[in-house]
Structures are given as structure tokens and as C-alpha cells.
Amino acid sequence: MAADESPEFHAKEGHKRLSVFISENVGPIVSEWEDFARTLTPNSTNMTSLALRDHIHQILEFIISDIKSAQTPKEETIKSRGLKSRNPAPTAAETHAALRLTGGFNIEQMTSEYRALRASVIKLWRRKSLFIDDEDFADLTRFNESIDQALTESVSYYTHEVFFSKDLFAGILGHDLRGPVQAIMLSAELVLHIGTLNDRQKMLTQNILDGSKRMSELINNLLDVTRARFGAGLSIFRVLMDMGFVAHQIVDEVRVVHPSRTIVLSVSENLRGEWDKTRIGQVFSNLIGNAIQYGFKDTPIVVAVTDDEESVTLMVHNQGLPIPQDKIGTLFNPLSCARPDESADMGSMNLGLGLFITREVVQAHGGTIQVTSTEERGTNFIVRLPRAKTGPNLHVAA
Image (cartoon, rainbow, N blue to C red; front, side, top):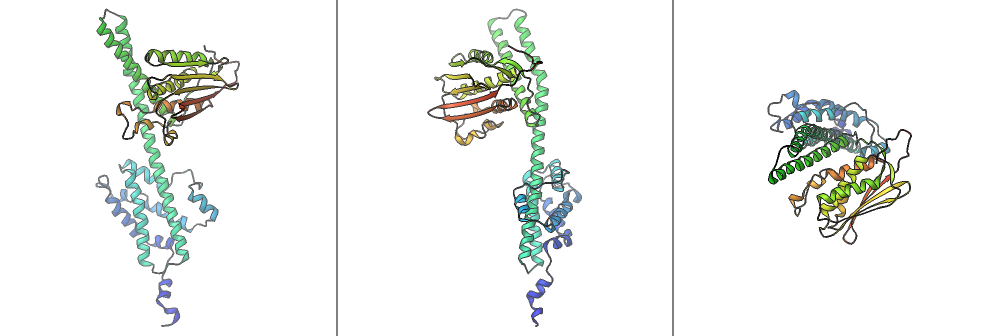
């Protein structure tokens, strides 16, 4: 046998680059994709072949094009970090995610399709390619990058749509609940002001009124969270106001609700500025309520409002079990308090909407909020709110 007729030569002679192999073997690859998709029950059971093959041809076209395209080391680094610029039009992977979502597939099933596609292409290619050189390893790297990019696009779109749907549902639910709750509140108030009630009837009616007010507050919080997560942010109506006045007002209200707790309030002079009075009241109420919930019952809650020339600082302090350092980073995320550890008291759980709304209000005012928590110094929430410049058309509030 001549040197140029060795088995290695023949293997190399019939060898095809990965992009060429994929182009010439779309049929078997798509067939294996469909066979795997058929196993993703129960939603695949009654799906047509066309629906199961959804956008696989376009995804393969993207992979082929991506493998063949030139790429500098810098572009490779940018791509590996997920920073590659892209066309604003929906990609095939995103459209595939949308159709799988509406088809009832969960995200694990959709992700498994890409794993199966990766394994299928490499398996078929290795069966027909006995010889692999450096170029093939480079192609294989580019192939894996392409699969990862398509997978990332699908997962990102899928999760975005799921969160969007949940937020939309929460917003609609909160809006629809407002009417019935307001009807309950008005009816309870009316019962208290007409006719003659004995003490027990007054107590029960007052309980209905208090409970409905609490429900109304929770619904408003839910709607605030929904607006913030939709990207609209919280609406802010700035007025010229005195932060000290709001501090006294909210602290007095909290003292009525929690007569057994000691709340120490100190305010400095010159606390006027332009803020949303109602929203600032939410900040005070949420932070003080949080301190009462997690502070030791025999220790005071300290609230201090100080003048920092161009800004005003609000500090709320409680002495209690310190917040774990690994929890502080997610403290302001909604639902963070709804994921208790094994030792958590289920009766003390809440959705954590108050702190999320507090952060959104502070940020909407251009302010900052910080948390420190240790056994020795207790827990401190520190809010800094810049004073806005007054204007001729400023609405003035007390």
C-alpha cells in the first residue's frame, strides 16, 4: 500500500468539518430531536411532528453559521461572558422557548432538548469521522458555544415570560380584590355608626373593619410590587414637607397598635424637603414594623431623623437576633421572607414586600438604604434621602 493510501489518509480524505457535516445530516439530527421531544410527556403526547420539530431547522442554521463565522480572541471572550451584541428581533431559540412555554413544557424539559441535541450531533459526527485534528477541536468548541448561546436565549426568554405572567396575574388579582375589600370596609364602618350595638357586636364589627383595612394595605403593597417589577417604578408626587412631622405621625400610630412596645423617637431641626409624603410614611411604617417584628420584646425601638444639610437621614434600630450576613444581600427582594429555613416559625412568615417597597421608594427619591446587623450593636436600617430643590409650582403639605 502506498504512503498516500494508508488508513489514516483515507479517513482524513473522507473527513468533513463539523459545520459541513451538520448541513448534510440535518435529516437524521432533526429526527433524533423529534424522537427525544416525543419523550417529554405528557404535553408531547398529542403533538404533531411539525410541532415537536419546532424551530430546530432555524436553530441548526444559526449553529452552522456561528461555527463558520470568523471570531477573534477578544470576540470569543466577550461571547463567553454573554456580552455579545445581538439583533433586537426574536431569535429562533427565543421563539422556540415561547412555543414550548405555551405548549406546557417546563423549563427542565426545554433545557433537556439542548442537551440531547448536543449529544446527538457529536454522536453522529463521531460515527462518520474517524480522524480528528486541531481544526475539529476548534469547531467542537464553537459548536458548544453556539449550543450554549441558543440555550441561554431560550432560558432567558422562558424565565422572563414566566415572571411577567406571574406579575401580571398578581396585578390583576390585586386590582380585582380592591372592590370587595373596600365594600367590606365601608359596610363595617356603616354598621358602627348606625343603630345600637352591644359591646360584643361592636368588637366583632371593629375586627372586621381592622381586618379589611389590613387586607387593603396588603393589596396596595402587592400592586406596588407589581408596578415596580414591570419596570414602571413607583409613582412619586413630591411636596414640600417636614420629615419630623411624618416621623411623629407614624410613630404615634404604631404606638397605638403596639402599646406594649417602647419606641424612642428623636428628630432634629431643619427637616424640610421635597418628598412624597405618603411614600415616606410607608418607609417609616415598614421599617418600624420590621423592627418590632424582629426585635426583642423587652428592648426599645429607636427611631432617629437627623439633618445632613443636603439630605435627611432616617435610622431605625432594634436589638434582636442579627441578620445573617449571607441574607443581607437578598433582604430587599420580594418573597425573600417566604423561604424560611428549617428552624423558622411558619406563623411569623411574611412575603417580604414591605422592605422591597421601602427600597423602591428610597431609590425613587434618589436615596440610599443600608443595613448593618451584629449581636453587639443590633440591627440598623439607615436611609438617606436628598432634599430636592424647591420650585415655584411646588405643592405644599404639612
